[in-house]
Structures are given as structure tokens and as C-alpha cells.
Length: 388
Image (cartoon, rainbow, N blue to C red; front, side, top):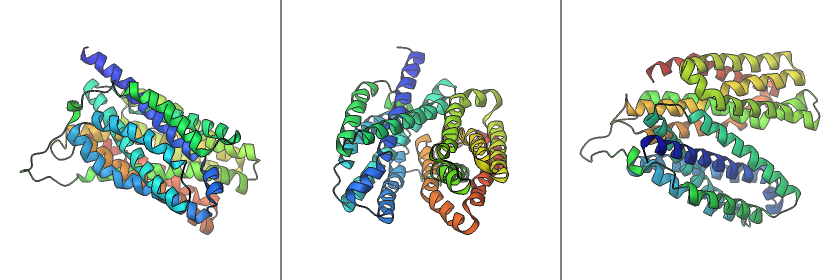
């Protein structure tokens, strides 16, 4: 099998990894109300349990990045895929808040391990082929998340227990994982071994800056997921169905933007895509909030989704490119991806409560200007991509 065929096969493998990762994650989150009811958790206790999952993600990112650099991303991706499908059913048999939080911590570790490994392998494929794939990979994650949410909703409607639900989902994904793990590139393709006698350099400042841009993007993503519908219903009096339209519009443009983001970035360059997209999204969301009404909110989130759709994929692509070229011997692509993932993911942790606090002070309508401003900041910072 020649190099082109190996890359083509690995692309399918990574695509399916993103799809199943989104599917398992979203399938669980769709059942959170059922976990809350069965375990009789208060809102605050549920929040702490979910925070345990975030803690697991943050705890795993650094070690997984180093492990992927030492052993190759495919080796970590293979094992982490099995780990995720093994842990998922145990979430369904939690019997109190403590056990729920403990298992969610391990679930977060598994989620992070596969996330870093599959993003690193995606970056490796881009480097080997000279083409862009990350946007499409993340688009399939969004497709998987949508399918997972639908599956979770159906199981909830049929009153299937959380354990049986998780067991069925894990069994289905396991069958795919067994065949899919043969598709990845060999581990030697992206190993980065550093000699013990050579003192490791500090992480380049540019990687941290890129992580902060990811943080700005993730705060926006979290705001759309958690507050878009609340804004439409409570501020502008939308019905229950219409109240879901801002997030549906946002999700739709996220998927579309990610499917076409690679082509656009190849044609126009990552810098221009982020510069124009950030301005469009920031101005669109701000304009929708200023105009007001349900229509304004829907249009605002629609444009905002277009702006954010390419941020994380382009950051990962750029990190891999810089690690291999500008910062070779200083940081590996796997570690660069892990650094950016860790900083970015923190936005999902702090974003929703931050928006809630600002909503109490400024009203939710004007608090939503914060994600709009962050989109403009992403646009203004796009000049860092001239070094890619």
C-alpha cells in the first residue's frame, strides 16, 4: 500500500473517531436531566458533578500530549478509543452523587485522551499530505454530536434506563472501533523523542496566545449552547419551539462552516478566514442583539456560528505546522495540541457561569455582547497566522 492509500485510509479512521467521539459525548449529555432526577441531585450538586468531568479533561490533557509525542498518536488513539467505550457504561450505574462525580472524572479523562490523540493524528495527516482536513474532521464531530443528542432524546422518551442506553451506545461504537483502529498511520509517523541530556525549552509564547484565542472561541460556543435559547424565550418571549431556533441556526452554520472551512482556508488562507469571519460573527451577533426580537437573535447566532466554526480546527492545524517547522525540538505537535486544548477547554468551564453572572448585572441581552467582542478580538489577532 503506497503513501497516498495509507493517508486516505487514515483519513477515514480519524473521521470516524471524531464522529464516535461526538456521538458518545452528546449521547450522555442528552440524558443529564434523567441522571439528575434518578440520583435526586440539586442544581448545585449536579453542577459540581459535571465539574468533575471537566476536571478529568484538564487533568489528562498534559500527560496525554506527552504520551502521544513519545509513543505516536495512533497508539494513544487506539487505546483511548477502547478506554472511552469501556468507561461510558459505568456512568449509567452510578448510584449517588459521589459515585457519579468519580465516574464522570474518569469519563473526562477518556474524552480528553481520545480528543488529543485524534486531533494530533489529524494534524499529522495534514503534514504528511500537505492538505487541510481539520475542518471536515470537526464537522463530523458536530454531526456525531447531533446524532448522539437525537439518540439520547429517543431513549429518554422511551424511558430506557441510563445504563442500558450507555451499554447499547458503547457496544455499537465498540464494533466500529475494533475495525477502525486498523486504519491509522503507524505510531512512528509522529513520534517526538527528546534526549534526556537536552534541557527542554519552555513552551513558546505563541502557543499560549493561540490557546487564548481558542478560549475566546469556546466561551462563545458555550454561550450559544447554554444561553441562546434562554435569551430568546425569557428576553423576547419566544415559544418553546422558537426558543430552540437560535441554537439550531448556530449548530447548522457550525457544521456547514466546518465542512467548507478547509477549502476556504486553502484558497484564501487561515488568516483571512479568521479576520473576516470574526468581524462578521461579532458584528452579526451584536447587530442581532441591538435590533432585538427573536428574528434578530436567530440571525445573530446564525452569523456567529459561521465565525466560530473554523476557529478551533484552524488553531490545531496551525499548532501542528508551527511545532514541526518553527518550534521543532521545542514542542511536539501532540503537546501543542494538548496545550491549546487545555486552555480552550477552560472556556467551556468558566464561560457559562461567567455569562450568568454578567446577566444578573447587565441583563442577559447585553451580557451576550461579550462573545461578540471576543469574536472581534479573534479577528484582530488573526495576524499570528502569517507565521503558519
